[in-house]
Image (cartoon, rainbow, N blue to C red):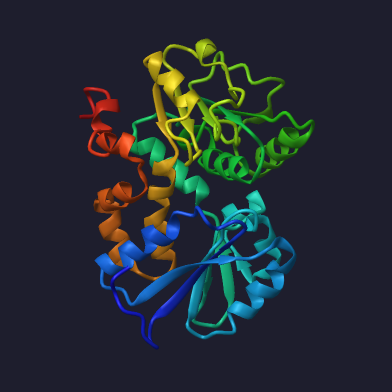
Amino acid sequence: MSHSISGSTQAYLIPGDPVRNVRLPRMFNAAFERYGIDAVLLPMQVPVRDFAVFFKSAFLARNVRGMVIAPPHKPLVVDLLEGCGLFGRVAGSVNVVRRTEGDQLEGDLFDGEGLIGALDHYNIPFRGKRVLILGAGVSAAAIGVALAEGGTVNGAAHIAMYDKAAGKAAGVAAKLDAFFDANVVAADSNAPEGFDLVINATQLGLSDDDAAPVDVARMDSHAALFDILLRNQPTPLVRAARARGLNAQAGFEMLIQQMPHYFRYFGHMDAADAMTADADFLREIIYPPAMHAEIAQPLCYRSPSVV
């Protein structure tokens, strides 16, 4: 980060535990510098037991304008806010907080919108389609909200959630099904047959010796796969799906697509518009070297009628 920090610099914080591997500080600070914004995003190592005190205390500093929330703190934020967006309320977690002009703290959740943007970027159809979500944690709930929010026309026609923890998927699915005009159910197994899109929202794949979250060989020949993991990409799951010729994508784009939402939420409209038009500089920051060739090739995943 080469731009200087002064007494007028706006501070944004990213509390998490751990924060050693968070990617957003590099991305945010590169964008602040690129667009001439006098601001900085700093990682904060905060244990769960101290989070509520830290959260309230940090905003006593008048130049702290907002936070981006890293795991495991996303579910802890909702009850600490004066206002919360729809996605955050339904999913029960928040990944961004801002100080308003009225000195209130309000938050929202952009994980799901990042997923929608990533699917569109790679021309992975989901509107009116059948989607299997593997996992029922915070990220899976956010993804479910985003896919269900559009109803059965602009969103997925059918959403099935599977989690090995008994009852976990059923609870999330029931909440989404009741809240939105969508068909959301808990799946009895991770069988991918009959689904147009499979989304891995589990931690399986962070290590090469993890069990596969789904049997790629059983996926329909037209189906697509999206793996939200950021580390160890391309994961064995992504590699196996690509070996079958399926449209299989890593989770980086989900993070990229959230960046304009973050900046717009914080009031940096021009930067948000610029990133929407061209975010390749961010991709160069977070894509591993082995995948850099894919940055300039999103069109190779699109049908001839779209190109």
